[in-house]
Length: 155
Image 1: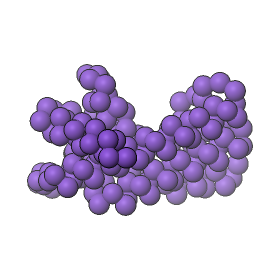
Image 2 (image 1 turned 90 degrees about the vertical axis):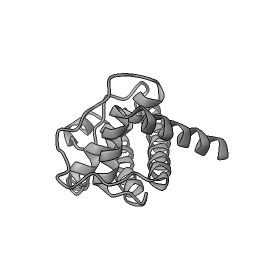
Image 3 (image 1 turned 135 degrees about the horizontal axis):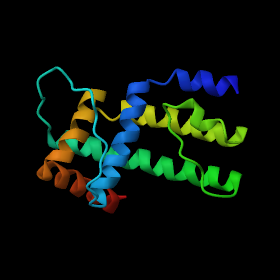
Image 4 (image 1 turned 45 degrees about the vertical axis):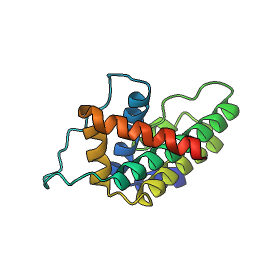
């Protein structure tokens, strides 16, 4: 139990929250939902240009994290025998009700998600900015959707 809480506390809380909100946002974008999480903190720096490479890195990151989320979800579901409760990487309490083996899977998913995001070539602020912009900008939203479709077709 101590190992799990220590690992969770070592997570970059801002990045983890952003990733989870971003995943929800992208899933919403892909499914045409209008309810998408909004970040309350604004980056004080000027808005950087979003390049095609940024769009591709963003799409790849979200798809990689989502595939890992699905695997973790299925493993946890198999352990507990039904649908897992809501698990949030930035809320260690959301892990408490899970059996120890399922807690380890959840912690591994959170750590892997953070690593995937850091290896994407996008800074946390750029990743968050793109998530926010995609909510407002239909052209960017379509670019991200197209990049995800292309990545799925090429795999």
